[in-house]
Image (cartoon, rainbow, N blue to C red; front, side, top):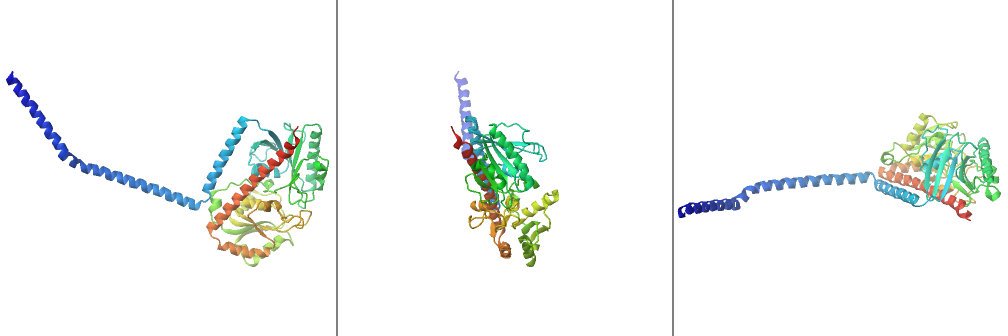
Length: 446
């Protein structure tokens, strides 16, 4: 028994010694042997960290360069966030409570498309501009708007589902006035039969401000038109029931809704200025062309003059005109029959600064003796960032100054112009709605 126990004990002692030697080997030699491996892993981690830091630095540098080239990016983000917030507010309000007011707009003049697509930023279905009937919807504040337009929109040939209407008319010339009068008489009949309660008119007025034909329809004169929004500097404008409305872009010539782009804001433009239009004999437009030729500035500007006015554009002429706006820093805006012209708003759409001949034209429009801001009262009241001149002899000095501007200075100026124009349209939309709500609804409760 003792002999059997002795070998067993010897075996256990031997195993203990082997384990002790193995443990000692790991303690004193094993760590030093793995140290290079650990160092290698540390190097790989350090290299990876350095690569990540370099990549992050590259991204930050690219972001900084992007910010340097695109100072509008932050504004665009803020604007997008504001629109999302506004849309959510509208959605929440519409789901929690009913829309208080409903107004339908009957677009029977091309200026109605400027109101709907450019100012209200509304869409039309179908998108085809030749469609017989087009319509759309929009919510502004507490008012739900519907808009209809097209050749098929005729008096008595469509259903009326609201009792508050805005009628957009053309009163520029005799034939248009006859058509506009028919619509007003139709609206008058609807008022008498109590199918309508309130009516406002947006009028493309006469360029001489000779609009006496509509006086008898105004409520203040015993008529039924509550509000009149009228183009040009009419002496009737009082800020109460007769308000100025912008001429806008030439939608009848299919001038589009221009979306601001990176290239529109940042690209170098090859021309200092442009003028594409009709040069009437013995007019300031002819004077302008002569001045451009005298000092050779016509070679620095995109100039294309014609002797006769053309009411419609071809696809080619429209593209040339838009290219001229997009490739010019300045757009020259001489007076025509009226100081206000489509060219002013079209230049704003493409970030080309309007150079406006700031003089009164013949006719009955507001004059400087009674309206210190006339002409272009509406634009001046909203601090339009234009270049106003009294005489085209001032132009050479303006063009010389343009040559000294850096691209960055021009970018900042374009940014300011495009932002102002967007603000201008937004303000008009809300002011239009506020005036309608006040006139149609708040003054007629009970």
